[in-house]
Length: 271
Image (cartoon, rainbow, N blue to C red; front, side):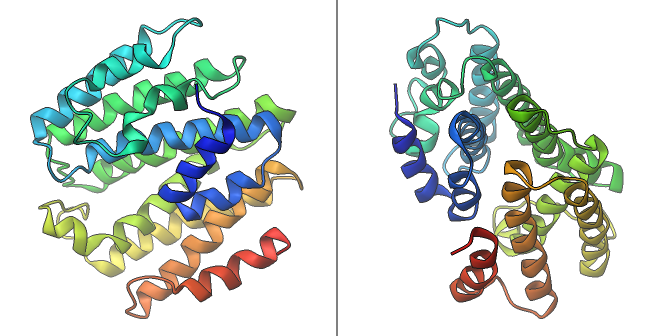
């Protein structure tokens, strides 16, 4: 069983962006959100893996989903990691340790994290199997809900579990979709190299920028309804970075500089 410090070390190596807001969370909430993030990142690395064939990704993700569904409160990491047997040398550490991340969540909320992980794995398997074909705006809405909007709902449940914080769940979906839309724009070139196109048929950059703007406006409303506390402290950092990244992309830049990230985050963390 891993410690919280071990999990945070992997988190920092995997995503500096989310390490910062998660590191600010208190006690068991930090464990729950770290567990959720690392689980999602573990299966995301499988979906995006460059060396795995489509059928391998689909089989792995579905096996993970089934393993999580069959777990009990006495499960150990080996139960979950059985689904990864044979791929230990191929997958990154964050994926190999999926069982540890699942068991990091506090017992009273772990089933919600497990449910989200199982469902996410199934959705990712579907999109891998269909070659991530996005042909219409409805497809784009479905994809961004599947991989990000649903995470917004999970976070809402974690806030409520921790201290009773209530959120507008429609806005929570928009928060997730908005962040994912910025990722789609930022990773456009990399996705093209692996033959994936998340732009619906006939869409250009301005249309996708507008899609991101619409959902980030919902994210603003999501945050505006939050009181000062862990949920707001966490949620505003990714949103500020997403908006700044979108502005940089509009200027023709690929990403924010490290200095820009530091300057944007510092006032939000008291650094």
